[in-house]
Length: 257
Image (cartoon, rainbow, N blue to C red; front, side, top):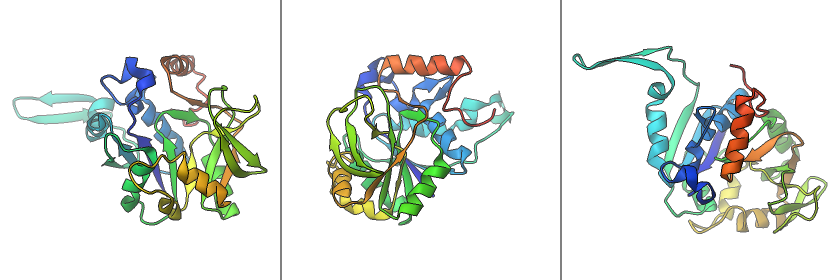
């Protein structure tokens, strides 16, 4: 199963970091947050990624094209034009990097990469949020309910729009959280290929018409995640994630050394 990661936004609320690089490349513990997200999936055996690029997408392309240079010691023999890579551990990843447009909305980005998804079930998440999501349980939940879409529902700080739920079924969306017990869209979707038909064009915002229509059609289910989840929306979030990592207490680090 392939994993689609939305990595094309401008990251304006984190402008201190994103004036030179896209938000998914902002580092936590010396690694881009995008790398952390991919490690979460990879821990559960999902290693085939499709990255939706937009703002400064070439930075992400360069990172993966020169992955060994970024993560290994190298000896460069300039005279003989050779390079030796030391301790060249690599991830078991296949990464498809797709330019999906500078101003394309989230839904449009998903539609643009559909040709790389082989008309199969796929996963989707945002390139700026981490959590100790049990991907195995998430996928099993999706397969068992038989609907077109699953969203991971989380309970974060109260600055997000909320999901309205009946049991595990998403019935509608609210602009603001109704109370401290509200659940929100935490990304980490599992989707059937038919969801692409809910996306009109580049102007479609995934979180609006497609999800609302899926909900109305009874095709959107919520997987409740009671563990850690945190987006990196602002510099404060970045600093908090960095502090967790440096303290050795990063809840999303579910992989070994």
